[in-house]
Length: 55
Image (cartoon, rainbow, N blue to C red; front, side, top):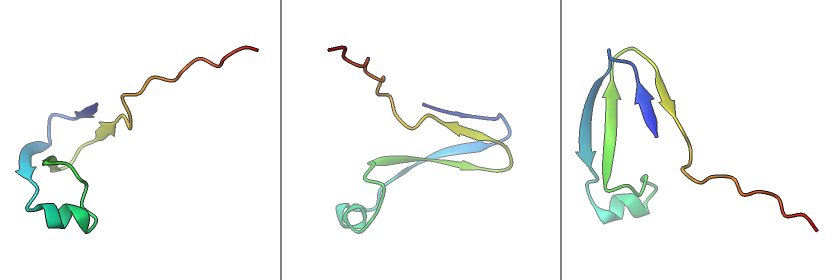
């Protein structure tokens, strides 16, 4: 999940090649670019925490 303030301009970019991903790219086929002044909030994972098991 990503949220940003309205003053930022957005655009999508495709990764240039598989080779660039293997050399340390993000591994994402499409990347979101945000430009300008403002704030971006990124939720690092969509995984929900699992409850601890009781023994």
